[in-house]
Image (cartoon, rainbow, N blue to C red; front, side, top):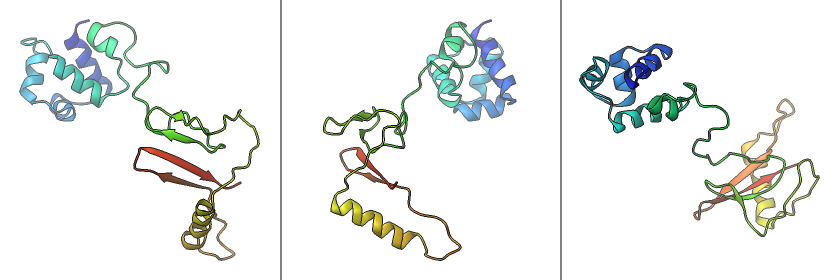
Length: 161
């Protein structure tokens, strides 16, 4: 199966016409038409646009015809800010690498801990509870977590227990 056939297979699986597919990946319809008619081979730029739009498609499969059409769980994509964050623990994380700062305690999963909040953090949680959550008996909502983002691309999570 060549690149043209693999592109056709993506279009079939995604149930897209050539015009819609071309618009989705950001190329001219004529460019895609030339590829599908065998006049031209897809350029690296076209292949990159396909992979950028259809993130679950395996690059090895699209370019080389190796492996399955879709990425497996083990194939990593660009990490996001919230990858691998344990919501039960307070952490300082540098985006996008999720590196715990050296001055933060390393906690084991399910380890009970109390975070000593600074006065400003305690005040922030208190203010959020008062301002954001109306106090009436019918409302059972309460502030669970506050995330503070800093200009140096780090953030801190404060979670009430």
